[in-house]
Amino acid sequence: MKCGDGVEMREKSVILNAQKHLNLMQRTFLIFFFLLTLCGSTFSQEMVQWRGINRDGIYNETGLLKSWPEGGPKLLWHNDEIGEGHSSVAVTADRIYTAGLINGIGYLFAFAQDGKLVWKVPYGEEWTESYQGTRSTPLIYDGKVYLMSAMGKLICRKADNGDFVWSVDLVKDFGAVNIRWGMTENLLADGNKIFCTAGGPDNNIMAFDKNSGKVLWTSKAKGETSAYCSPALLRLQGRRIFVTQTANSIIGLDADNGKLLWSHDQPNKYSVHANTPIFRDGHLFCVSGYGKGGVMLKVASDGSSVQEVWRSILIDNRMGGFIILDGKIYGSDDTGKAWYCLDFATGKELYSEKITGKGNITYSDGMLYCYGESGEVVLVQPTAAGFKRAGAFKVPYGSAQHWAFPVIANGRLYLRHGNSFMVYDLKK
Image (tube, rainbow, N blue to C red):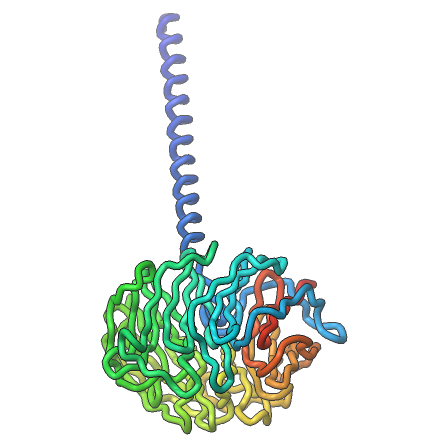
């Protein structure tokens, strides 16, 4: 081999190594760009909604207190000027959103995590009759805030500054029918759709474009009035099913086009079905108050039909919700007699106890948070043998009914009571 040949080979090796290094850099840049785009897309599609990311009362927090000192966890701050109402709060990483009634007008509020008011905007007439005040909790989705007023108005505002985006009047524009205690629904979103139950004879269930408020589809469904129910979304074999309860029925619609797929009878005394249905392992559980109780439905694999599996009147609360966890269902009854643990498969009672008065229930990090209508919040560990009480406190601020659901986020407990909301530190 000649000396020149060796030089040429070394030059070719250097060139090949440089090309490999360049290709590696290009691949690394493309992967980084893809991940950056993905993260940006995920952030832009952030959703904070009623009862947590899956609308089931379960918050995926960790490192929380397993017991409370006397008087409860540390109160970080409170605000007593949010107006009257039963709306809960929607909590993002840096903001807290809620709604309240002030002098007959509904207002949306946005607070920083330290309690500073970021913005406050009016959105129109609100409920001033029995149990006056706001009902629904804001939905935060893709940089916007959505709310249904008790007067049947859908509102969309920008989440960062409260600026107007769009609104529609379901009663005036679509023949919606208001009900005894005001239209109450925590809105559901999916893709580019915002769903709501207008409850009119023709426009019964509706889907709107989330950016413009344009009607995407409308369904007559069963033609029944709304029933205070906040809907659920089932995802089955590529099909999305919108599920809610109207005056006398549990109904399932194709979320893409509004076609009624099935209905199941569920009447009760006052047509009040305020609890969100929960779907687990191919089964749908729904609870109604006034002694009606709960029903477990098996959903066909393609979502086209349902079949009743069992019924129980033990958990029959009107609006306190329930938790499904590890093959068990937890919740209170409608009379304040007891809080129950039922077997998911059969509906049979596993155990019960008078934890506090009837109320609503939330779960995070192995613990149940039972908020009684008496104003007592009780921390409970569910065990195989029963409920293990781990602390309690009385809500110190606010007025009227204790109906708003607690929220657990950022290591904190957020409580709404009438014109006040409070923020507690739950971290160990």
